[in-house]
Amino acid sequence: MYLFETGLGQTSRPQPTGGLVHLKVKFRHSFKDFLREVENTFKTLGAGPTARMLIKKSHRALQRLHKEMLKNKLQDTDPVILLAQVYYRRSKGTRLADDILLHTWGQLIDI
Image (cartoon, rainbow, N blue to C red; front, side, top):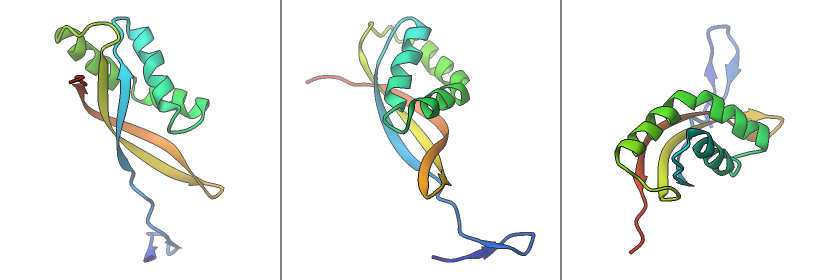
């Protein structure tokens, strides 16, 4: 691994940027219930407090995606997939989800 020099003359390792994640959730007509479903899915990325923090950071994006889903007339409990970029940070030797950027969504169809 390469080390690089920061502006302060200190050397450090490059931080991992993050990974693209497909989050499978059930659509809910109520935005509050939809947030609860997404939070339960976020818990797979980390602990409960981390999931709540990710929900707060992505609240506006989730609201935008939820409105798009309502316009497409999805039924309650339809499975959808959210495409998200998750950014991690290191804390005491472990990787913790630090931020999330939601890109788009798609409907899952059973064949």
